[in-house]
Picture (cartoon, one colour):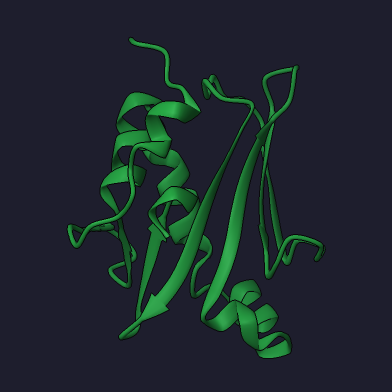
Length: 131
């Protein structure tokens, strides 16, 4: 497997192609997120985010902070011991409204950001470069 780099991901600048999540049909994602999932063998990351969107903890957080209901930011941070943390925030300085511990991952980057925004009741997951 070719090593995935952030420079490769930054080449994605947005287009109109979308892929629908198989389980949470209200979640779609961009070619950049699809490329990330394929190259990093990390479709589980899309699944993890999609499983939180629309969940009770998500809806509770959105009821307390309107920003979450239209856009929020996910970060996967990989730790040296092979564990990781997936966290969602309303904005950079805010504390996460969702945090999930990943007990093991071989994800090839130290961290990755995936943004989520809603349009016509569909949540689009995309890379920051695709904004």
